[in-house]
Length: 129
Image 1 (cartoon, helix red, strand yellow):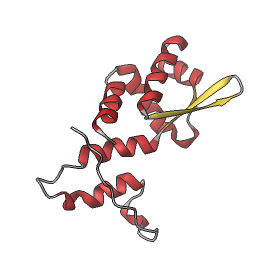
Image 2 (cartoon, helix red, strand yellow):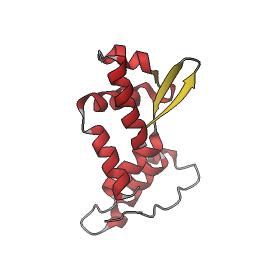
Image 3 (cartoon, one colour):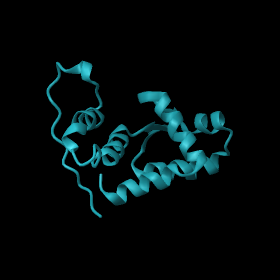
């Protein structure tokens, strides 16, 4: 994730309703939620929710799929992992190799208990300042 993508993600999450939506979708997992369900759960008008969901989708943190006349939204975990990796790429007081296991786990979406899987490819930061 580069600087512009990270800024877009942070801007999307900087509004209270969008942050609530994002957290709700993280909790919902892969099943996600229909747009109307999200509106009802958070008590937000559907047209306002639609605008907020659009901002989150453009930021790369949320994806959607059409189901007939409804739209289902899910957290875009690849975008979440990219944002977390971006935040941690310069950690550990100038010794990024110390943070590499944490970054790898975030980027690959697994924890250390899953060591029987093939190793994750190395992360090459694309940060542009």
